[in-house]
Image 1 (cartoon, rainbow, N blue to C red):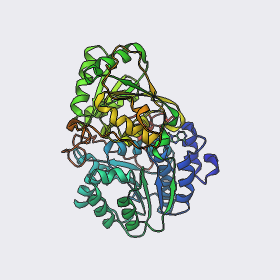
Image 2: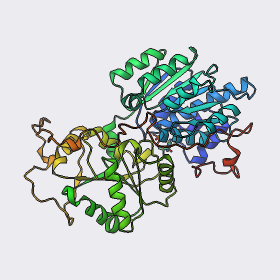
Image 3: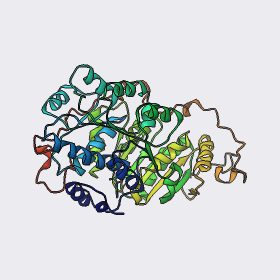
Length: 453
Ligand code: AMP
């Protein structure tokens, strides 16, 4: 199937073609026709599968049809709710790209920044609103958001939304929306609480599921370095200086750890910056912007901050710490090898982390190459190689070490404000007046707004 086989507006097809996309990814192929058909759709897909376009493209199609019937009056007709501001910005960037030839206005709102620019942009008129839950409710409660015309609702990353404690906010928002509307829900996993939530607001939903998390890793070359905790920073420096070229996303379990890594790398003359919940939104956007445009070589991120980072053709990911939840490993390596391209994922593993590695093997059932010809090889710690330690029947007698430092997944942003703390960009992403997109960004009208951040 090709995009041109889908019943999409010629202007959307043109924008998609300019992105260089010809063939829809499986989630897009499954979801787009159902959404265009008017069905409520549950998409089980994680970041990296093309799921943002899977809901953005048909959303634009439907709204542009609705816009015709309303003679271009810019009232909010669609709402996309997503847990983090990075994801919100990412979605808005996708809308800007796929919808750049449409007469629609998009706005992204999130907390941690002053609300005035967002309120002003709302007053200028918006067709499609992308929002994080806290700020959305704030502005709704203050009467700045007219929800009466909303006919299209997307809940993105529903599992993450619930993990982050947004379930009550989501339910509150749902109560305030008009009852008659089309609903989409996207989630990487479908635990019972999501199924219950979906039942509560969706009508006869059609489910489209793609590749379970463990298969995402297949197109990524994976390698592990056994190394003592105290040698990790030296090993990282060695790899970045002598072994690997190009940009690297480094995962750190904790915010503090991320800062330390950056400080060390900078001291060695390696261009690196950190993003995590304690950084101001300005600092995060600056680092992400520099990383995306290629001027920053190393971005060090905690898991929560890294969600939603979508850098095309990111070749390498290094896990400085292994996560204690095996699925997180898969999410992290999914940052590279996106949408069919290949990538390389390196993990550092110290003695305490061997138990985590064992869980990872059990989940992915994939071989990870062990690199043992480096200067910081872990001395024999008596712990067997986890890859060999899994008995043939798959049962594992080893217990996780009790190591409180490894609990709680640093960077989950505990204690942050519900919008994830930090500042946010005040920029309203309202496309300009009648012309749709922001005139400030449409520039020469050529290749869209990819470079704008
Ligand atoms: P997502 O799962 O939405 O985070 O998308 C992952 C990546 O796939 C992004 O870099 C998209 O730009 C890219 N992408 C989305 N759809 C396609 C497609 N049909 N063909 C190639 N790349 C795509």
